[in-house]
Image (tube, rainbow, N blue to C red):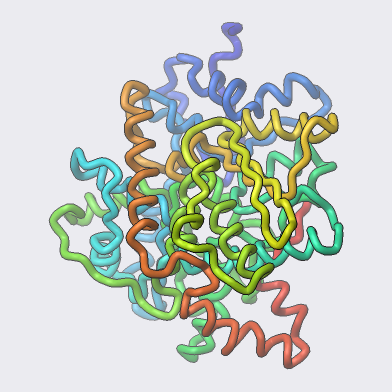
Amino acid sequence: MKEEDLEIVYSKDNLAIEKDESKCISCGYCVKTCRDEVTVARMYEINKSIEPICINCGQCVNMCPTESIHEKFDYLKLKKLLKDKSKIKTVSIAPAVRVAILEEFSDDLGQNSEGKIVTALKKIGFDYVFDITFGADLTIMEEAMELVKRIKNKETLPMFTSCCPAWVKYVEIFYKEFIPNLSTCKSPITMQSTVIKTYFANNKKIKPSEILNVVIAPCTAKKSEIKRKEINRSGCDDTDFVLTTRELALLLKEEAIDLKSLENSKFDSPLGKGSSAGLIFGNSGGVVEAALRTAYYYLTGKNLNKNTIKFNEIRGMKGIKEASVLINNIEIKVAVANGMKNAKILLDKIKNGEATYHFIEVMNCLGGCIAGGGQPKTTLLNLDKTLLARMTGLYKEDDKAKIRFCHENKEIKEIYKDFLSILIVLKQKSYFIQLIKINLIC
């Protein structure tokens, strides 16, 4: 590694990450991570004609030992706005947050603290606390159907997941030829936020502009994603702020709230707790598994039985995971790229005709959202143990859940019956599409 390559320079226009140069010790961890794990810096070295653009994944943040690199802190702005009584304040929690945030308050690893988080968020001023597993369920309803349609009609395959904004940006910059392969579905966070400022706003008879809508996510890239012009469909910003798991911990500590000591509370409805299929989105392989559960139902009219509901081949920390599923005499081949380095390997194999699949999940962060750029930091020595505990925590919830299929979520059924399907009947199909789809741009 060259002496001049020991630091990353961040643009002031970066929507997710910033750097305090005074704390930088030129250790080179950020450059090594970007080059060797995320492969972004490596791609710019290969193609000198491309102007460097950060994909906002935040893995450099997780590796920075001095806090020189960190997410753009929005929690201080939010702290002031929470006192604005003219606003209805809503917040949604991403799956991976609940099995990680307690690390900021105790030595517990992988404990599901969702009930305590709901209590804490109500204490600091939120009126409604929702679960993004609802948005994940909605994503799978559309994504699984899109997959089935592409297979039946012999349309563009393989279909790639579009949940991870860092991955989407990576494709848009470095592999433009694969843009048509990306699912057209918006991410769970952006779907949920649009639904809050349309469906929820309509039900409560309030204007979208009167809602202060916040998302708590494990991800720094979500801070950038919510600013994409084609995401917002309610007439204003659908998501006003994204706070990382770390930011929420900072906010609670400043408010003298000890998360571990709180009682449990339930999510608010509608947009309350989703299925456990939506919950495992937080793990590498979780999106493919959730989609296969519902795709099987779409193709057969029946649910997978309890002995085959798990797809163990695509679980865990292996870099590239593969599975083949026979549904109605159709062999569906799926793959999971765990981390961007492994995604690049898969992309190059597909380009060279060395591999064929129907459906591929890609998550930028090694382990999935549980290892997002906004999660509590851990030492390299404890990293594997920590990630395994978070992953296991989500799968434990799936094992004991009553509703393990996205299409069996009662509130998902209600939103299709009372809102989304009605839009189509009223010939407002284009508006329906705007709520759930993303127009991918370069």
